[in-house]
Length: 354
Image 1 (tube, one colour):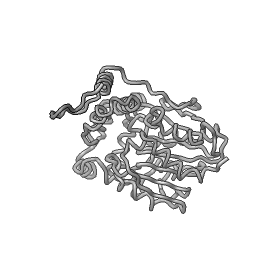
Image 2 (cartoon, one colour):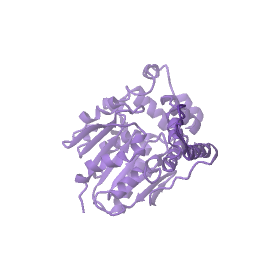
Image 3 (cartoon, one colour):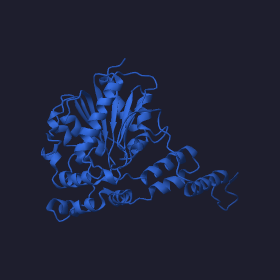
Image 4 (cartoon, one colour):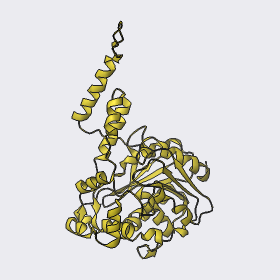
């Protein structure tokens, strides 16, 4: 049923059925429980403390070299496997890659002393060992996203494990730049702002504070709600919107020891860029990275700016290295399927097709 122009009086065309459906969906979003997240087919192959290593088999295996995904510690990692049609994991398995995905989990108070050293050596390095053993492959490709890309770069530079390819997406390397307000950065660098006390008081930074910090550093925007109202008649869009809305408000907690390191070694001292960082007694020198190397940023990323990522391309020793910028934003990179498309385009010729 619709209403149209009549006579000389203009009456806007309105599709009443579409409008009813739109506002029913908006009402449902506001009143119904958050949706369940259905992951891509997987099985658990290793656990350590709160962390879990998942294996996602390829739909039809096309490549010998498996892929290991590393996500940020700052948010929950299911953003990379948030449901059919929006899953980085699913996009890769659809394209013929076996995928291993380390879910860091959320630390509890007893985990307050877990440092970045522990995460990189005790969790990530051991997780990659398990993936290699499980796959039977002689080499593995590492894909790191956001702060997970920073962690992946550090890990690749200090490990003796056989890393075939390294892909970093929206990765912060230069911490003197970014979305942290300039006054905060200056305060951190001069020592007038210090987050050590916050870490010591809480032990583990709770999810409420992490969410508040995330929202405080993100541009205030009503566009997600505008998009919902505009497209609420599209049931598939609403499903994706609701999954994204759930993830946005579902922050991870953060170990106090790792929190201290993040702000002191990275934001305050910028040690990774300066080549002054050590992890587990191992000096982190990104020049040690000599495998095929691919970095990409997005043009509208307001969380990790392109100038934070760009220095890494000159810091590695890889002869086969590529840097690209694509249209899009930080989170949309994961949700639109573009991450898997971009990665596959570069990775396919470097993964030993069966």
